[in-house]
Image (cartoon, rainbow, N blue to C red):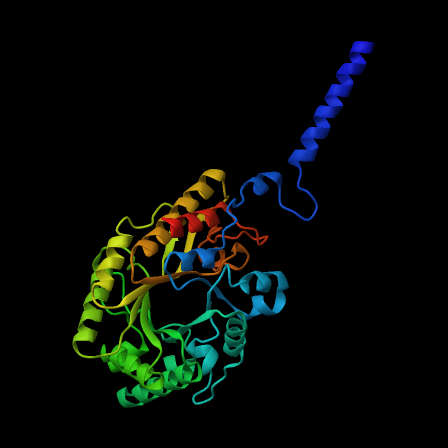
Length: 357
């Protein structure tokens, strides 16, 4: 009987240990998730500046700022984030929903936050074939009218938000290197790019003017098309200061030629920036997938760190809680360096290591 009592006590103790360390704790994620946390105490924007970059930044959007005080507090920490990009607040449908009627309320909120925190603003974006109000996309404007409408829009928006970096033209290319079909290209032709950049420079001579696109991060026909466009623009005196590499990557598929492509772009006499970085995985998340994500983020940041004229890295939302990925790519997500609980993932360690390389 005595032996049985000892054995029962041992079993009870073992059960208590198992329950205590296996079950989720109140107000937190599971212990397994807790183990998947960043270990670095370094601050990402501080690390970026120490590496000679202008910033490490994040995109944001108004609903999150309005509804989530903890999210906003982290975003406002300028030792973590030195730059903000508005995900939607400065796009055409948000700023000029009706012809000649401009609304800047949401954009002004983000700019005010950045100014209060001493953060750089990146305007995103003035001319893009998507997220256009129907009065633009379905208007049937002739060439001259659409040119006037586009120039007025660019001038008004950039004039309102002076002193920023701007994605003036967004995603102008197809993956095969041809110019994408949109209302501007179909009506005005390829010179819509020239006209948009010229209007932007006239509105704000001090703004940094970018063309931004995806799938140009590694060597290939689309990157070559971008390089040829920028070279042509510069040869004709059209203002262009930078190329934005969106960098929406799939886990394990960061281009091995990323640094070389950055160098090829900067050799044209422009700067580059990583503008919309996230690296999505097929769910559910595992330790192995997180380890790969950490490596991938490190490789991207390291490439920017190594290239002198890569000015900074922006993540397209810092947290999985507000990522665009799950609603766009079924079964994929967890693409950002903070998790849904606003806790740093091992991915963050990769960012710090990349700035230290």
